[in-house]
Length: 163
Image (cartoon, rainbow, N blue to C red; front, side):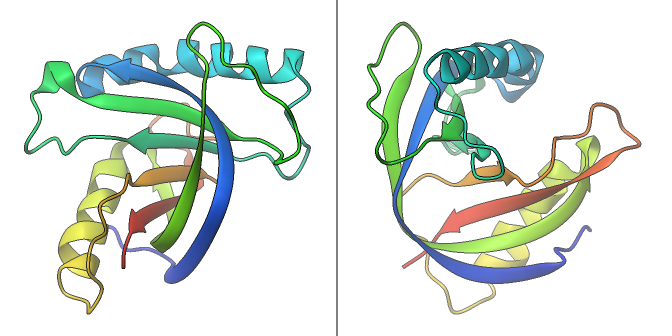
């Protein structure tokens, strides 16, 4: 099983994001994710929302795959944006914010290891630690660009909402 380089705790306060939501299986999401990220980046670029060395890219998981049917799973591609930038929701682009306390697993992952990393965070860390899950969405934050093949690795942080 894959283990994180470390696990930290972070408090996020009104981290503004823009996102595009996808509904369907994780396999279908993976097939569409590049197109969705391209649409998100196009909007952000057009609206001057990208800040070099500050903007972060995320994948948000709105549903539990053990409870929700594959065809109804909601997954969002997202990007952090500056707090002072006005944004008008349009088309598929939505605006939101993320707040609260999170346990953060810091991983170096290949494309095929993401599922194992999530399993570690829930099965090995959350349920065996003193932390209690909070009713909010977990997400991946891509510290470096996600791997484009099965050999490459990238730095990815997995955020689990906790009390």
